[in-house]
Each structure stands twice: as C-alpha cells, then as structure tokens.
Length: 320
Ligand SMILES: Nc1ncnc2c1ncn2[C@@H]1O[C@H](COP(=O)(O)OP(=O)(O)OP(=O)(O)O)[C@@H](O)[C@H]1O
Image 1 (cartoon, rainbow, N blue to C red):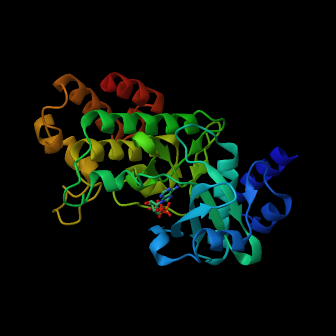
Image 2 (image 1 turned 45 degrees about the horizontal axis):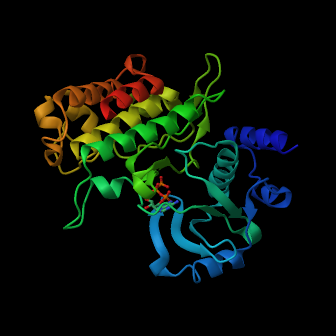
Image 3 (image 1 turned 180 degrees about the vertical axis):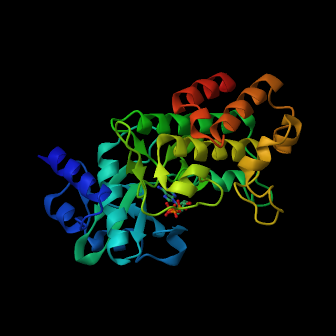
C-alpha cells in the first residue's frame, strides 16, 4: 500500500499538484519517525542559535540530540512559504524514503504537525565538503590528494545509484555544499528537495524553475530548462574541478570569461590547474586522468559528457 502511495505522491510532486504534507503525517511512512514539534524543540534546546549548523535556501539546519535513542541528528526547519516549501518537503521525504545507499544521507524522520515542515537527518560530523575546500580557517590543514579523490569517488557512487534507478533520479542540486562528510571523510549526498524523477524514453523533463547555483548549471539547462542525467554530470564535473583546483565554482571577483571554473579550466594546462596545496602528492598520470574526466563532464554539449559509471571507473583508477 505504501509503495503505491509513494508512487502517487512522487507523481503528484513531479506534476506539481496540491501538496500532501498532512497526508504523509496521517499515513506515516514506514521506517521513519513522525516526530512531534515538542520532541524536536527539546532536541535543539528550543532551536537555539548556537545549535545552528547552517542556512540553506529552504531554511535553517540545527544540530539536535534525541535523548530517546541517544542519537545526534541534523534538523532542517523549512521556511514556510506556501506551496513551494510544501512541495520541496514532500519531495524530500518521499525521495529519501525510496532511496538507500551508503553515499546518500539518511532521513531519520520528519514533522508536519501544525503547519510545521521539519526534516530530521543523520548528523554528518565533518559538515560540508565546501568547508574543507574553500575559506579554510587559519591553521586548518588542506585535505590531501587521497582524501579528496576518495570523497569524489564516494560522491560519484551516490550519484551513480541515483542515475541507475528506473526512471533515473536527477539530483539537480549537485554542489560542494550538498556533499556532507561523516567520520573518516565518508561522503554522502544530501538535499533531495530539488531532485526530480528523470525522463523515460525520449521525453526530457522540463523544469518549471531553472535554478543557477553559482556556476554549477549546464549551459543547455540554463537555456532550455531541460533536465537530464547529463545536467547532473556537468555539475559533478564542476565539483571535481573545485576539489582538485581548490577554486570556487564561480568567482565573481574575476573578469569574464574566467569567472566560471568550468570555462576557465577548459583553457588551462595541468600545472596551472592543480591546487598548489597538492603539489608533489600525486603522479602526473593520475592528475591527468582526473582532469581529463572532469573536463569531459563540463563539455558544452551534453552528448560529449561521460556517464556517471565512466566517472566512477576513472576515479577508481585515480584513487589506487
Ligand atoms: N545532515 C547534516 N549534518 C551536518 N550538517 C548538515 C546536515 N545537513 C545540513 N548541514 C549543514 O547545514 C548547511 C545547510 O544545509 P542545507 O541542505 O539546508 O542547505 P544548502 O545545501 O547549503 O543550500 P540549498 O538548500 O539552498 O541547496 C550545510 O551546508 C551543512 O553545513
């Protein structure tokens, strides 16, 4: 019964019918805890400011502690902006309840009582990849080559799982901030509120909202709003370039055409590309392999981009 319900809900999310958040609460989703607002209020000491982990496009994320299970969690409280927020909420809950992989962040539960829209996730103690690549606080050592390549490999495996579903799940929001890190820098993709089920047959899903997340968007997506697995591949290529160059995806302080990392990297030799902090840590062969696959991912024409399975193969070779 629940599977049928989930499928119906996913379809209604994709076709943007009326939200179903109260419906989720009433029916429950097997395996996920339906929290009361009070439980989460207690877990975060009243959503105290010093528990704030970060602010995303859809609301604040707090660190919480569930006394009943002795578990640390991340609690995302969505800003209530009418149906839009509701749609993202239902989409995230339904998507995560169907998707399970060691490189995807786990949903612990949710709360949709009294107009609240709150998601509860496993806590990822090392935060986002962004914070380990960019704007390092003084004294923090940059990640070494082997850690960086293993993070990329794990993230690529998470994306491979999504793309291997029938129909494929398009993450649509692949970026460094959405790669969260657990103990030992184990990476997990997060944030499926924007994920969409991909096209079947020759149809291409046309998004009603084209979102440019600062240098991560494939050119054809910006022009047409058409979502395919190739648009995720482009974004993943930008993440790869960030991780190995240490540069951000789009640097507004630079003159065009050097602002977008993907465009800049296409014109550079390896010596210029590699993050100075990685000098001497990796053979030229592995560096060239990694840059070659990253550059293929950010090709202008989607047909020239590799599949995520090819990316996993290349990164596996670069990691050994
Ligand atoms: N499960 C988690 N464990 C630990 N920290 C988390 C977790 N989820 C989110 N965070 C922190 O909260 C921040 C905001 O997360 P969130 O997913 O809301 O936004 P985002 O991905 O940065 O942006 P957007 O929602 O616009 O894509 C993250 O960058 C991360 O630092």
